[in-house]
Length: 159
Figure (cartoon, rainbow, N blue to C red):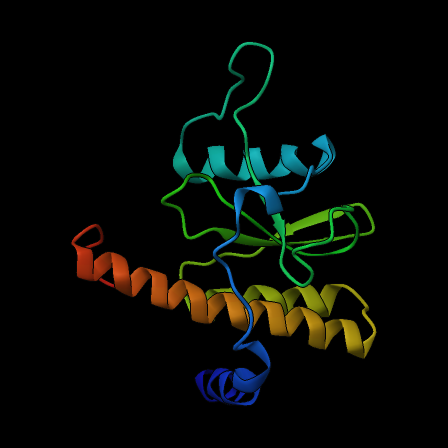
């Protein structure tokens, strides 16, 4: 599996160099509540604390379209949500009304979740490759971001 991951990073290097995960605030898109609900539930379970409403609204949870950041229409694709300004973000796939959150605790976990997603969902080859490009670009970004946090002393070590 690590060999496969290495090959994927090597092959996708030229394709994903232009991918930027430092999204501007105005690039966030309005995700439907049906998409935000499972993300909030995921965060609540992961952190052990409910992400409850503030007043009548839930806390703002910016969502960015990874493959086409300038597009504002929410549709099938790979997205990234940021929990805070200090968050490296987390990927999820939205397709045909279903939200699948990909674990990002390691490259292996991210690729395993994406592989499992492909086993469960029939996607055209071009869509699989486009999504893979986004996943590998995010893995490269996430690793670099975590390295910077270690260097700054905000994180003890890389996973």
